Length: 274
Image (tube, rainbow, N blue to C red; front, side):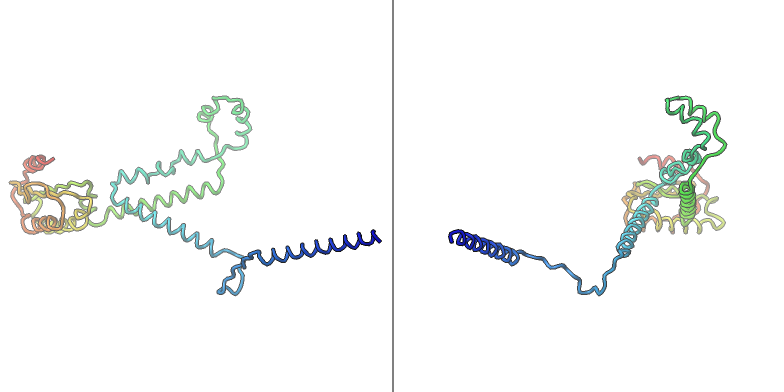
């Protein structure tokens, strides 16, 4: 009988333990915070492809590239041709024949011939190749295509730059550079007769509108020379709308034929100002 009571007591203990375990699991399930998965109410189907995201990123990269090109174009307008060529010449872009040759690979027979000598550190290999260069080089298609694309782009940039320089007053007076500008105008009979006076006035007025009204120009001075020197102001003036209007009025009304061209007097007068 004592053994039976022990067995029954053990069974009760196990049942109580199982009940406590189930109770703890139930309590854990009740207290555990489960976050429901977010589902969009607007989507009716699930797309496995993310092509839209890829396309959007590509568009962002393209817009960034266009904006960078616009910034470079704005900067190019302020540069002289010499400054512009420092970043757009064939040498700067790596589009010379020397660069193209350096991108090529030696034929297999030359590789087999010189590989062992290069491995042991023979310094005469390069001199020998320069003295007896191979008759041909090997290029992969991607290298040739990139080089050709660079050449076509450069030719297009050069054409655009030349057309821009040949437009408006840049074709006649060139690209105005600097912050302190002085105009010394030839008002001799030889320069302002036979219809030249009207053409020069029109071009000068256009010059004031296109180039001399830029923000980078700080001071402006205008004088003309024929037999004598005529000045608009006693000294260079800070550029503003009033000063530009006075300069336009001077060109329109006071620029007239005045005898011979006393260029030396005009240069001496202009050299007084620093």
